[in-house]
Amino acid sequence: MPDKAIVEPAVDQSKRRFMKQSLGLIAATGLGAGGAKEAGAAPPEVPPSMKGPGDGMSQYGSPAKYERKVTRVLIRSQPGTTGSGASRTPLESLDGMITPSGLHFERHHSGVPDIDPDQHRLLVHGMVKRPLIFTMDALLRYPMISRIHFLECSGNSQTLYQPAPPNLTAGETHGLVSCSEWTGVPLRVLLEEAGVDGSAQWMLAEGGDSAAMSRSIPMAKAMDDAILALFQNGERLRPENGYPVRLFLPGWEGNMSVKWLRRLKIVSAPIMTKDETSRYTDLQADGKSLMFTYPMGVKSVITLPSHGMTLRGAGLYQVSGIAWSGNGAIRKVEVSSDGGRTWTDAPLVAPVLPRALTRFRLPWKWDGTATVLKSRATDETGAVQPERQPFIAEHGNNAIFHFHAIQAWGVAANGEVKHVYA
Amino acid sequence: MSTRDLWLALALVVGGCASTAMTPRATEGPILGSEATPAQIAGWDISVGPDGVGLPPGKGTSATGAIVYEQKCQACHGAKGGGQPNDRLVGGHGTLASKAPVRTIGSYWPYATTVFDYVRRSMPYIQPQSLTDNDVYAVTAYLLHLNGIISETDEMNAQTLPKVKMPNQPNFIIVYPSRGK
Image 1 (cartoon, rainbow over the protein chains, first blue to last red):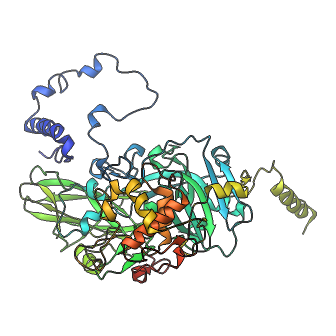
Image 2: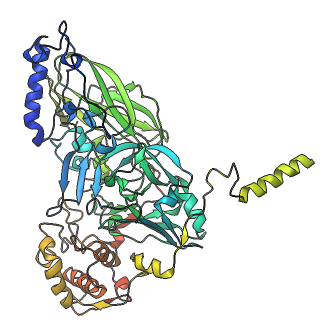
Image 3: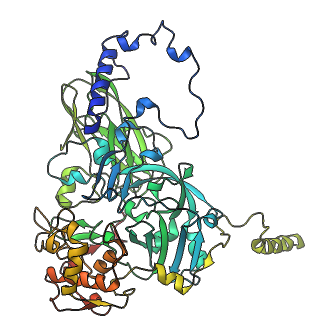
């Protein structure tokens, strides 16, 4: 009985009709080979795809038409705008560690600008010996590095601060994290050419979008591992990821990796922009707010099975998920199938890279009774992902950013998987 | 040092500067930036720090700001900054530790200069960088006055704005670089 169709992802409202059809299909196959839809393809019949040539080559490939339901999810924008909002990666539909560029999450503050790379310029100025302007052609001649890193919006999982568990899928709650190979120029090279004043401690990064989104970046990070990214997963950046050039700060809250980068101003102190004061600060239960909370905390989530899926009876399942930490590499992921009473180390899938999504998998034999699944990540600094209850006790329900507590999925006796606080 | 070593050292020094060097440092840049002129920088440098550095000449008061606000801001932020359909900008004082915190310019924002910086660079949403500096000073004055932070007649300019004390500023705790996780 246990077949590959044991679980199927739920999708958002707009996909409900498709799901009904798809569920019907899976039920039909599950009940026995030889349903109407299978005629002509299952043995002993020769499938139609072998009885005539297929489609020709294409200039730019697309996912299979049968995978069109796999899209970004929970696309929301501010009232009256189309471009001030976010879309999320459908984590439960993906596997491995790399997020396809077209499914990388989006967070824009005033839409995706249309920028001609021949017209775009990067200005480096402020406390430097030589203020410099770079064309994109010039940047492409600089020495480059490639690094695989996650990018996480610090507002990821913010619905989990709320007192009641949300009726949302893994992608809808945790999908403001994605992972790509980023290729570009080490920022340090350009800063050294400009000749940064030794007393400069900060750098303002500003985007060329209509929000002119800007953040103050500590000079220590800029000179350490910051990248001026020009390529994502082998191709030039997608427009929604900052084309033609973005700042990339490994492990730090996504908002600081300013897209459509047009200006870097070397300064002595933070500028205190809107997005580092009124936003991206963490209001605590006592009314105080934490500011400049840059690295993303150690975190994991089980994507298979997860909210909205249904297990088809007791038996063997493959639990799978992702873990990441802004502090470095993931050292350990433990999985519990009894609500956190006992834990088992889950094997990590190589490569396990610092500040990258790390896939874990663990076979699990479900006995058919109601239970709760959890995962708990530990990073190379020894930081352990906290349980939700102590995390909320420490930070309260009013924060919006940097939620990284343990995620619990309740499995009902009928196989339904739902978001629970446990 | 042998003659051969000397020759190698010399070759490295010369090669390091020559455009035909086969093995420059891995992170050596080709120096392709062009020098930016003060006029070019002035056209782009719109950031304003909490110390007021970057504030342009100009001035405005709440009365003028009210007119600008009604024309350019009210459709999204409601009458007198009351919110709806978008962010509320006024009120919420004393709510931050409650179960329903209301984060506005008055109750939450730590620096008054941020209002000027943000409005000038990003607002109004459909037409950013369209307001004059005087308009931005005036709208900033209007929003600070509605929040009870300055009086109706206080003029906001490059000297007065950085001196405005925001009530929630002492409640911010700067974490970087002390916390590593």
